Image 1 (spheres, rainbow, N blue to C red):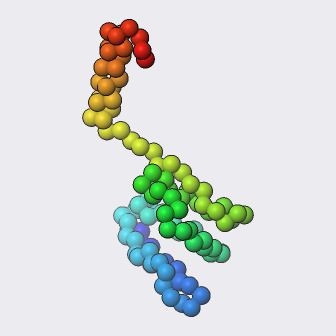
Image 2: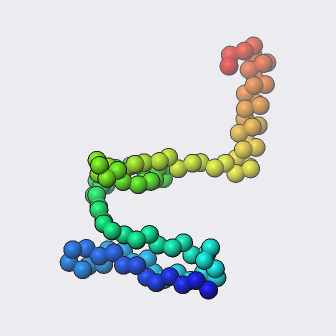
Image 3: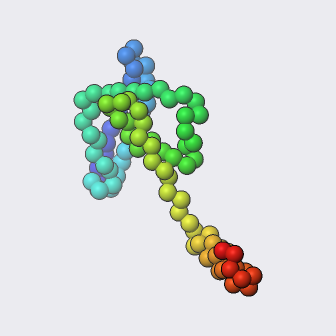
Length: 102
């Protein structure tokens, strides 16, 4: 069994900002070891800075202190894929019947 204790991040006054909680796993593969932290940085983003439903912050560029933003990939379900394929086929059929507007 692999156990990992709680990691607490606090501010300059000792106020708790984040607590990871404890982790228990059956094997070492179940629990990712923590990276040794030698320095902490923070940035404050304005409210509404980005759309968190379509993007995520991958990391912070420490030279510019700006977030590096990645698009969240949209994964189609099998049903959505089938609907898109049927819509495309319908559009191509309509295009052929009308005489090639697409």
